[in-house]
Image (tube, rainbow, N blue to C red):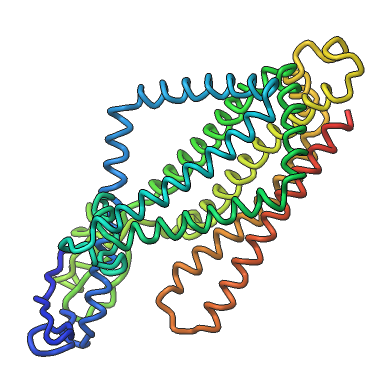
Length: 403
C-alpha cells in the first residue's frame, strides 16, 4: 500500500506539520504526533538501506566469487606454512606476532589521531553518529571526527589491555608457547586434520540447505482465501467463497451487491492453522542437526589427536588414517552421546530465539518491568548456552578417549 507523508518542517527546533505538532493519520479518527512519523520514517529508511546493502553484497559476490575462492586457497596455504613454522620456531613466531599486534594498534592510534586533527574545521565533520543514522555508504562515517575519535579510544583501551596482559601473564605465555610446539608437532603427524573442517563445513551447509528448502515449501503451501464482501447488511458477509462458482450460489440472490474478493493467503484446515508449529519444528531440527554435525567434528578431531597422544612410538603405533579411524569410531559408538548433547544445546538455542522474537515484538511496549524481566531471561539463557557448549566440548573429549 502506498501512502503519502505530510510535509515536515522545523520551527525553533520543534518538528511540525504546518503549524501543528500533530497530524491526521489518514483514517480520520486519530491524531498522531509528528515525532512518531519521524521515528517511523527512520526505521523504514533503515530497512531500505539494509536491503540495498544486501543487494550490493550479493552483486559483489556474483562478480568476484572466483577471487574469493583464490583468496581462500591462498589463506589455506599460508596457514599450512604457518603451522609448519610454528613447529620449529614457535617461541619466535609467538613473540613476533605479539610485537606486531602492539605495533599495529600503536600505528592505528596515531593514524586515527591524525585523521581526527585533519578533519577539524571541515564542513559537516562535526555531525554526530546519532544524527547521521544508518548509512549504506561506509565512506560517510569516515568524514566524521566522532568516528575517528571512537576508533582512537577503542584502540587505546585495547593497547593498554594487551600490555597489561603481557606484564602479568608472562609465565602463562611461556606455557602457551610450549603447548603450541606440542600441538604443531601433533598436527604434523595428523595432517588430514587441516582439511577435515571443510568436511564439517559442507555438512553444516547441507543442514542449512535442508532447513531453507523446507521453510520455503512450508511458507508457499498456503492457499488463496476469498471472502464475501458486501456494502450493505448481509448474513453471508465474511464467509469463505469460491470466485469461480460464486455467481451460481444463493449469496448473489440474497445479497445482490456482494462480491467474492481475495482476502489473504492461508487456509482454514488444521494444517494451515498450525503452520507456525511446523516452522518451529523445522527450526528446531535445523539447530539439532547443525549442533550434531559440529559435535561430530569435535569428537573426530579429539579422537584423532588422542591416538597421537597415547601412542608410545609415534607414528608407528598410530592408525594409518587417524581422522577416518576416529570418524568411524564416533559414528559407530558415540552417536547417542552426540545426539543427546546437541539436543540439550538445541533446546536452549530455540528458547533464545523465542526470547529474541518476544523482545522484537515488545520493543514498542512501555512496560519496563516486562522488558527488564525479558532482558534477564535473555542474559541467563545466553550464559546457559555458553556453559553447555563448554561442558559438551569437554565431555566430547572424554567420550573420544573411551574407545
